[in-house]
Image (cartoon, rainbow, N blue to C red; front, side):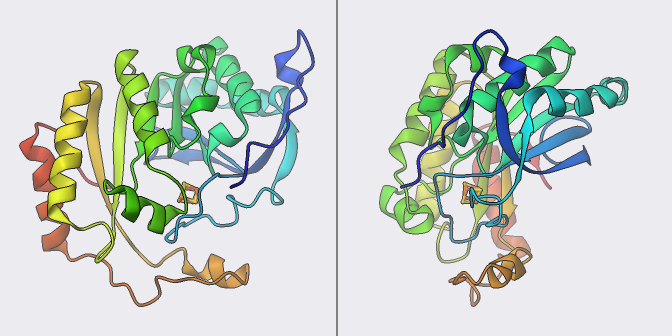
Length: 259
Ligand code: SF4
């Protein structure tokens, strides 16, 4: 399994930490509240079969940038983001694959007075130290499947670290938006979904749940990278199935959020 790749912290100057940045989006609307500046970082410890960004989960792709350079760019959008009720989201890939870099950027964003989100699978939750979480206002936590075997088959990794991270966030009362990608035949078991919804409700810090219907839009990236895409025959979930799954979460008191 891939590990977080080495950083190069300079003692006393966190902004000099460098990281591999795949791309940025200055007006994101689906990765946290308001308008978001989204930083897509390279590298991920999982290999999800439906990954829409297989090019970001590959560490070789991306541009090496310092936290100071990234923060300078973000600062240009500061007033706009504040006026739009938004902030900055670290996504990827998985930002916890480059924890020192993510930490420096999050800290700098808080210094700019901006709201911060960490979009992660939680698989590398151990890489998020207390300081990093103190500079994170909201975690967008992807729980890919409830059944551990299904999780492994879908992502190539273990479910347990994600749940441990979820429980740690709950103990810290850190706000979480849970995300669940609905894939027909893979993550549509209603009993598993009901269990996940009860688990999320018990955590006490999950503010909303986004059920995201699987789609084939990322497929071309797999072809471009010459990677085998194993879900080509999987249909998108019907509107009825998606609504049924959202209803399961609504029953536990979560608002019905639709992207
Ligand atoms: S966690 Fe996200 S970025 Fe990583 S492989 Fe899965 S879908 Fe792709």
